[in-house]
Image (tube, rainbow, N blue to C red):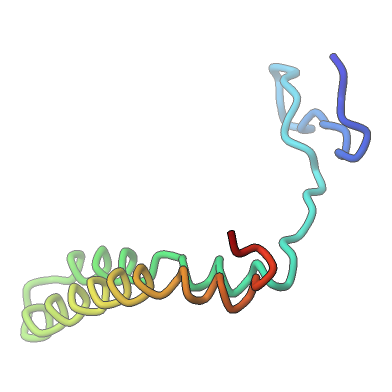
Length: 96
């Protein structure tokens, strides 16, 4: 099997009994300008909603659950509508 010269070679996991090769051990880190895009486009409310749903039925759950849903919807709408603008600011030469 041919491998690309720039990729790190795949290695066998030491605990693997099947002998199947794992993914390359070393992957390149994202470029500095990619980190704001990855952060802005990341999931914000999913974990907080899941944690709020897992709360016991006491006095704080009825207050916290709508707040978590509101934050999740807000981040989806605001970040979804502004990620294109952020990409244009960070990558002005990539405009088509």
